[in-house]
Image (cartoon, rainbow, N blue to C red; front, side, top):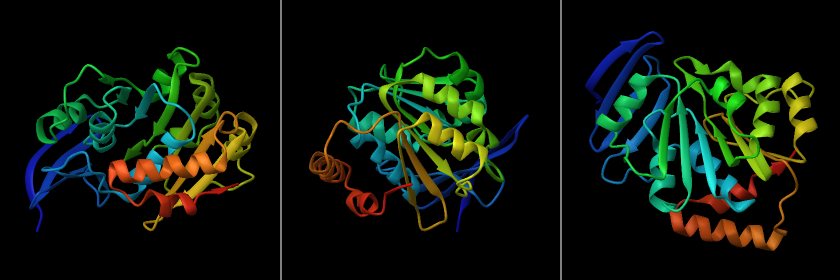
Amino acid sequence: MNKELYRTEDEYGPIIVLEQGDKRTLSFGSDLQQTSLLMHKPQYLVHEYTQIMLLGLVFTDIRQITILGLGGGGLAHCLNYYYPQIVTRVVEIRQSVIDIAYQWFNLPQKANLKVYNRDAREYIKRVKAQSIDLLLSDLYEAQGMNELQAQTEFIEQSNKALSDSGWMVINFHQMPDKNSAVMKTIYQNFSDVRVCDVFIGNWILFCGKKESAFDKNEINERVRKLAKKLGLPLMYYFKNLRKI
């Protein structure tokens, strides 16, 4: 049984913190969970789709990561814990969500973890070109995915923001049609496009500006090392990742 710990509301709607045992959940007032965190082990990624998104780490060397959408900070917790040498920037439009992530989900305040109260659309439009090695886009609202992730302009601007060997990973609630405008734009802007579907129905799209510099054996080894480091079944997900 979930216990309600905190509730507030801003211009975008309600924000609710729930607790069941050691698990704490963030909701925007619907059945969708924005974040689920184990408070004794916040670096562990509870949601399968977030585990899969971290496969973006294996295709290129990473110095700077940008996350679009904070929630309770699951991805930020994980990256800060296991990769303190990497600068991670998180963009979140709702200041209330940022405050709650610090207060109720123990988001760490570290020099390498920078959180910005910005609109993702404007942030990507204005960020320095070729400044991001890995872009993780997880923009969701109470009823589902933010429409920004399926807009062609957003894809084009994200491509410009990525370094020459950069990758973009997008959490799609439903896979866009192959002939849709957004998929055509992705194919035009990215040389390597792969997808992995998760059990709950989400589709995680991996978009590389160019083919990975690592060969198949090197990538497999990087996946094995990442899986061991994070304690996650990443090789299983990687084997289900296919080029499209």
